[in-house]
Length: 98
Image (cartoon, rainbow, N blue to C red):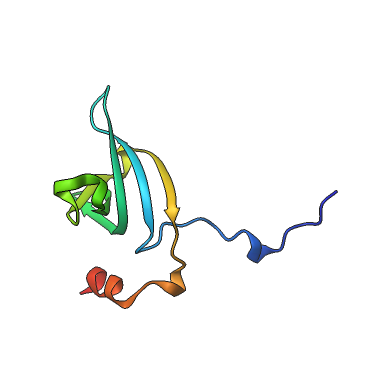
């Protein structure tokens, strides 16, 4: 048997500001929308929560633009590069909290 893992070895997975994610979400019943970029926060669209993603260079003409994806449309989230909460750069928090 393997030794039990320490609590710090497997911290809970959370979406953190400034992390790079690849999302797949529903565009329609038959179409999936691919989104790659940096997570900039959660926003509200009326009573619906949505993820704000700054699009990366894979989106060509939309590079640097913000895409807002309603959370109920998200199919999958791939964590490409996670930033720990303690490592969030100040320019990210300034963007988030003004």
